Image (cartoon, rainbow, N blue to C red; front, top):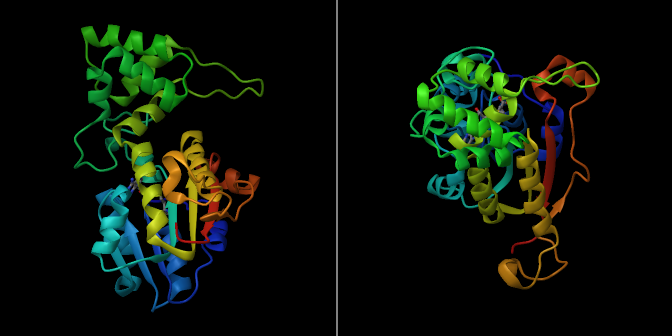
Length: 313
Ligand SMILES: C[S@@+](CC[C@H](N)C(=O)[O-])C[C@H]1O[C@@H](n2cnc3c(N)ncnc32)[C@H](O)[C@@H]1O
């Protein structure tokens, strides 16, 4: 199993950890960023690590064995951030990291059903304990719901046509594998070449949409962001790396509201116009260098944003 951590140095720079601090890694993966952080916080520091995928969690635990005494592992979705952290005996923490989306083993291991370059079952669950699979979405969702998720989560312009054709085809034969679905989508919307000569598979956006739907990725992120307002201490830092525009937009909009809280209406709870609760410490999103993208093409869409909490709401 291998996963190359993205923006490794920037993550540590913006987390800015000191000896004895408590970090929450909401997306442990194979533990790459956590390992660097554990070195910084030292023996007195604590890492609280969330991972909803059991395979990754076990592998990370093996890799981080030397730091066992400093670490609390939580096999759960980060949408339960607050209850799981307080339930583990912590009140407020010093830093929180989100390195969103999937890890390389998800794409590399075909039985997980995330990849269409390798044939596998239409699954796409980060957590196999969850009920909804990609096969159920493709074979059972109503045409208008398919169209909606392709359009909203895949930002696919041909969503109507693709949803219609999927519904037609499944009336004859249900879809069961990733390669079969990808091939069918390619027969509906052929590949387009960009001016530079590269082309992306027309199934890429549909697979992104399915993954977001199956794992309720945006719902989980939205829930977790709301909870960090209280879980983080004043002076605490949040670092978030997103890999598609929907996630990045959600992070950006959420903190914008806290940088310029409004006194009335639905956000009245945050009170005091112009008295920020969070301040941005990355004026523009940090992105990987050309060298990093060349060495690790999976980093190419990454955007890192970091914030510091400046007062209690
Ligand atoms: C990009 S990888 C993290 C890689 C890690 N930072 C490293 O350096 O090895 C994202 C990980 O977060 C997990 N994940 C995604 N969404 C999650 C959620 N809502 N709750 C818990 N874990 C999640 C995925 O299973 C995946 O292992």
